[in-house]
Image (cartoon, rainbow, N blue to C red; front, side):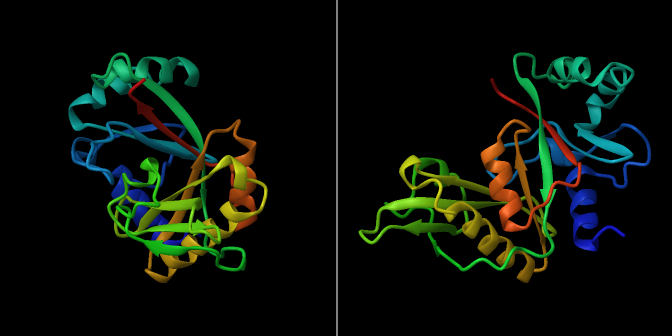
Length: 220
């Protein structure tokens, strides 16, 4: 049975769940409203074994449904133009979630994203970020939470090159996942299918690969 937090997150984030059949295109006002970073996300999709839901702006449902008989790669190639964003690119990612993070020791502190030590990519987050620093206070690795709704928060993590290979990222991800679960939401983690380093971080933190996929488009 699907965890109720994950179920409510998918319904809220996509507009409908479960998938029910190979691919369902649904219209949601969430696609034209500001997302976690204040910008709309015009396409969001999640696929699980047995089906997928692709969430698009309500007025673009017909155009996207006309593509559903195409092979997936062809559909993704035509998807940006179908939702009014020609020139953007579609992408797919491994979608993971976690209900029992690996009991790794905490390694970071939650600080304001405007703190001088926080790198630019983490400054996009509007709530506290989780940061690991060296003995001199320099940034080593950090996590930001994409608060998609009250039921689901997506974890983003990054480590400076000199600090990679120490397990910092996995410890931060597990630490952040525990906080998300304590708050009553489910933590999710997305990464490119070819990003083996990110996959290892996720697995070590307790986010196993269940064969789920996420879809979206981005401004190229």
